[in-house]
Image (tube, rainbow, N blue to C red; front, side, top):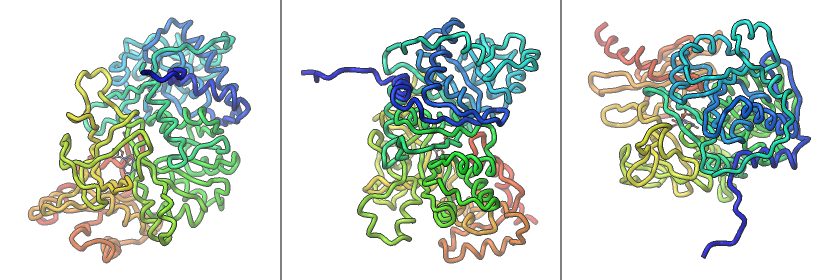
Length: 545
Ligand code: AMP
């Protein structure tokens, strides 16, 4: 017997419709590409999304076609997102920090029909325009600009397109399993692969990230997603924000610490999200500017491991609670978030801080398990100590990559994450490494994340990466590549000494090499593969010297 309740498809348009109906006057603050600030509302964003949806139809686009965006986090980009997915087109966000050749590959792989771009990215568009035959329209996310028109004669301008429309549109209803958006993996291993989200997966993910034990989003929050909309849909926050009526501050192109501190203080941001490198810059700038980040109640750190020192500084200096979260492009991205349980209240402050450093536990809707090897179904104990290969399944986890026929999952339907982790009975997951970054010394694993966390706890080290260097006796030994803070006279011996008593002796790196900077990927992750290419022979060379 079937249940007898109404059926409404879980569509992205229903979230913007809700925001329009019940949160129309809630503020959306946007820093534009020219750094001016626009103050708009969910009501206006929803209206303009409908106008742009009409404009897209007028350009002859039909359901299922891909419309790419290359843009910062700003209000026009937000409107375009809802317009694209709302009408059944697929919103393909492209990371502008990729090389032109990679952008060309991705646009051709996705067979994008349209590219919507911010002015800043005109040179990138010029570099690829002759090599992307499927693209029929280019739309600049701005008012008419003669300079751009001179360089791209057929370009459309967003403001002009929406001015020609009245917004009298009912969002169409269709199957909730249809594709809504497309993101490519960062491609640090091989060619980038497309992850095609559905309306259903996106709406369920939005519910999950808003939950109290995830990001705890509400209509009382002012949220600043520093994480770009081209990085796994800004972790899904622009969707969840509409669903719960959260006010947004969209930081545009300026992601330096000072600009972010100014936005937090001026617009009373209560919650901000970003990768660890963003927070490094922000903490330094806030200290220099004498800001207490008074309005900021919590910040969410993900994308890479959150160093313990960062969590401590946010708490002690800024009275801000840091929530550590983990996820992947393939997981929409939220896989875990770290919020304590009631039973943890009786623990000491120190014990609680230790638990909060883990990547967290899964919200309802996803499950985790550990296995003995990649693609294996043989499980490893979830006892908080045993290390295994992390696998995940759930409503918003990839089943197969875009345009691929083979499944991306194990024989019994789990996705291998490529991460190595421990898991306890409460679901708290702690990443010890990316499987390819683990350091295997004499058959024993050493966690590069742990070595980095310790190093970054030193007040004179700003960033550090631990990598495996080839060793004649132990196969691999850890080497630390570190960046010192300005004016530091720290030596290699000082750092090695700092490791004493913090970790087993055999895990202490063999060498510490100071560098000016560590190469970062387009999404702010340390490019350890490049470091390994540069330094993996350093211990052998040393022997020969
Ligand atoms: P991407 O799909 O580019 O976002 O990369 C996903 C990968 O980033 C994960 O598989 C992890 O290796 C890493 N990652 C994400 N969040 C964290 C975190 N909180 N701690 C450690 N690694 C993380």
